Length: 314
Image 1 (cartoon, one colour):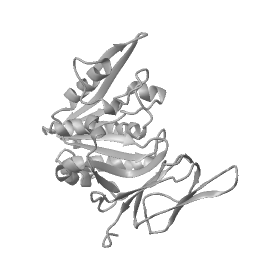
Image 2 (spheres, helix red, strand yellow; image 1 turned 90 degrees about the vertical axis):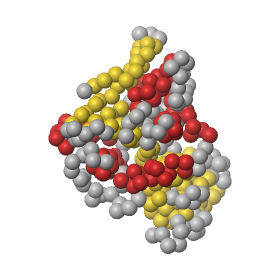
Image 3 (tube, one colour; image 1 turned 90 degrees about the horizontal axis):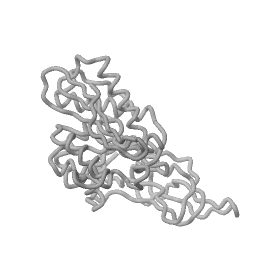
């Protein structure tokens, strides 16, 4: 059933309408929400929502509870391939929890918060931006790790990044919902403005697996393409590899593999002089879970993230 979560009139006869598809089955009382489309240039979640809706339509007897699918919190951004909210110059994921008496955008996000609050689980799906490519991962704030990491494991993503608290995160959907006691996991994968079908299919099966573990999906899904166990980071165990020169970043490398100390990740070159300006190497052994996708870089640009593994980890 398609329902309108919140809508507001905009100039020039436009409307900002946020909608969801609600599926209900069996006698279960639990409520599971899948949310995406906060950033208009992140499209992986569109595929995931499509697949989940198809599965629910084709296999309604397996659902025991309520699944709510929100494919586009920022529909204007998706329509225009704009990361933020067009016309407002705002990142939607930096104005939560909103304000029912505030600006139009604050009222909209307050309506989203009100609708999601109280769910038994929320999955907030993001892609990377156009500059970086991410392996399928769950990001969990250290303050909620004890509660959320057990749920994150059931998604069967490659990596669970338990990261330190940062002030900017306090204005995100996930932080706001978790602060209210609504468990919310952030999934990030792929690269901006593209859809990686393999990554998306894995997340679809991971979501069904989490629902199965919560007693909401009656059959265990196919997890043959997923890892047996996600790698879970330790606090402070991530190296950020940044450019030391401006130029073009060239790499034949790939993320989602183990790099060794001194291993070359890529190089930064000058097309004008033919010089190699920087050979980019790993400082320590670890899992490379982020790798630069857009080749033009400037001094300080992020090139890679490596989870530095302990000696007894594979």
